Image (cartoon, rainbow, N blue to C red; front, top):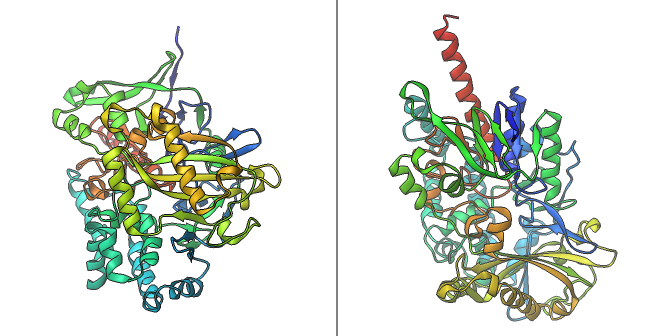
Amino acid sequence: MAETRRRDAVIIGGGHNGLVCAFYLAGAGLKVTVCEARGMVGGAAVTEEFHPGFRNSTASYTVSLLSPKVIADMDLHGHGLRILERPISNFLPLTDDSYLKLGGSLARTQEQFRKFSARDAERLPAYYAMLDEIGDVLRGLAGETPPNLGDGLPGLLRALRQGGRLAMLSRERKRDLLDLFTKSARDILDGWFESDPVKAAFGFDAVVGNYASPDTPGSAYVLLHHTFGEVNGKKGAWGHAVGGMGAITQAMARACEARGVEILLNARVEGVHVEDAPKGGGKRAVGVQLVDGRQVMAPIVSSNLNPALLLGKLVPPSALPPDFRKAVKGYKNGSGTFRMNVALSELPDFTCLPGKALAEHHQSGIVIAPSLDYMDAAYRDARAGGMSKAPIVEMLIPSTLDDSLAPPGQHVASLFCQQFAPELPGGRSWDEEREAAADLIVDTVDRWAPNFKASILGRTILSPLDLERKLGLVGGDIMHGHMSLDQLWATRPFLGHASHRAPIKGLYMCGAGTHPGGGVSGNPGRNAAREILRDRDFATAVKLSLAGR
């Protein structure tokens, strides 16, 4: 007979947000079980050996957005997490054998900008000030549950409180904020800068995980989303978790286990158990069914999965209202991402900045996307034929900061590539095209660093289809859904369900498909746990009141 566990709460998916949610629920005294389909926790934030002696982050690949509150509450540093800051943030090889470095300090970046435009160097402090002021407000909102249509007085009060944060912005900043939410990245950057390399340096963030052109309306918000982060207290910095991104989720797992959380591996959920609530109270979730026959029964079910996967695959359609089923079908996924790891015998030798000896540009985010026009062409190619003829590539070489990832004198590189259609046109399959796409990416890097191809000792490939199969990223979408205006804040994932609650009692959503969205932040998991505990406390208060206590 199949085993049945009875718990206070069950989490579907052991990605970082699922672990964060479990941690906070356990801290309130709940008995929590996490069900993870794979043989390791972490979801897209894991470290795996992909070539003998070479390890690297499998999907997510860099640290910045991870919430300082989550780090502190979970004592991740005490559980072994160590994050190193990059010496500079980005390095852009350019088509005329020049280059642009971004980061290190304001003065250093201005010096780099002066190579292309004295005016752009002068404008940079004001641009950063604008992003910082707006980013501080949105960073605060990222840790709060959005106002939710249908929540009555609590929702109204939440809207007033969060609206008050925005009201504190000056009129100029409110105008900037509106522009960032609605305009294209090119429109925003054209208004600030005149140099193509400078605009490319900032515009890259607008297409990271975003199947869009920098000319697409709303792409400016994605640019803004990637400025929310910080590393070791330094806002806007980017870093590397020693041991790879899996070091983050392994530390989270240890924090959870210290609070008594039960983590089941190789425990794929095939369905959510739903039954009629008493006295005509609609439907309620009562547990999950695993593919191996086991069950975990609990009055609280929280899902770290993409909302389309949870509500379109795991929940019986009859349990959802017809209008909500329509909204689920219309949920937009697909980020145009193609992910590779390569084992290298030596460091890349860039034509514009020669040398195989370790230098600061090898420790940065190496961005092959020299102009907004290049990025736009990549997107147009993907829309027309399925993949870019000259793809956008960000390469990180984490072994330059962390020698535990590769044998002495050798290196690992992450290649995070855009734009590759989630579904190929003409009935073609990514199973047939993945190797050709990987070759194209390698050739693209080789044009800028001619020793790159010859230095590759091994590689692993994750097409959009591979990302979906292996990690549950629907359409290869690393954000668990488009970060577009109709799927943000009070409309993420659906209008009326932004408070992490599905239209089934006891069923919650705690993944990146909820506010504030994608990136390894932990905020969706923390926010969901807060709402779950509010509901539980309210239910307890009602029971005590009815009992006359």
